[in-house]
Length: 326
Image 1 (cartoon, rainbow, N blue to C red):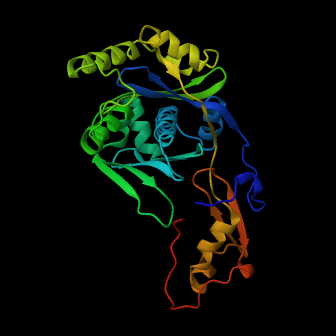
Image 2 (image 1 turned 180 degrees about the horizontal axis):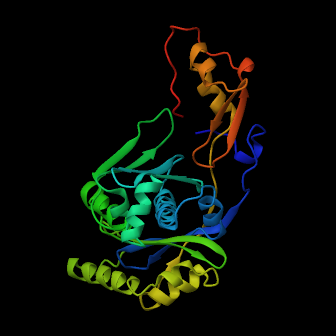
Image 3 (image 1 turned 90 degrees about the vertical axis):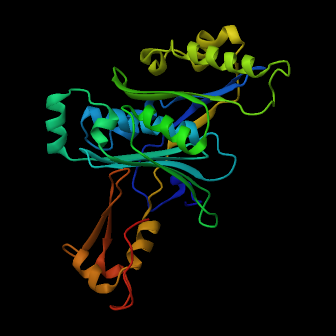
């Protein structure tokens, strides 16, 4: 992960300089075992999701994935990132999304157009699980090159992306979580959002008079109230986060914490890609060159980086091959 902000990277092509100041609104229910986060990407969703031309069904799942990792990354207490990677044997073969602790978002989806068209002919709005097929979902916490990554991997189970995530929480984290994800094309463009509730373990900040039965009832009350949330409300730019939370939980005395920003956060750069190219031997680089240039495309932001072959040194043949993975 580069320490250079994107806007200071002179070797980076133009990308949207877009920040949503109130992208994540953390909240809690005072003296109750419930905390949560409301995520709204706003116009950032449209900027991220329109970098590629995908079918609406794929774009919806990608937007939900972005909202999900934004919700999970906002809980990080250290410099790093939270990522989701789903791989399956269905028409949607790969889904990637990650978000740093600073709220920098990026994502990518790869689909087989022919197979997807066949599925869409049968189901105009297939669920994420149906498009992914059989495979796995990996959730990874990356604390940088000097720290060990933490990863949980579960099989793809369930219909929606929220179902897949909840399966992960039950299997890997043993957390009680309620989750709703939404993504749709609106009159203002694509919008994506998430609401996540977590049952707090232990007694910190909770009414000491609450016994286990009362804690369970408080959690059920919170999730029952959350179930009344509609997709339209979750994606409505004109409904402020504080108002939405009040509408849902005012009977429980909801309190919002300081909001956190989300931003367009692809971390590609000429410097980073040049370093990858230097790892290949000169014969491989010669084969990559077309009309004297090597072109590398960032899968996340869909931008091309052009490197004159004469300016890329590479390794002497026979000294080993580099990797194209960053």
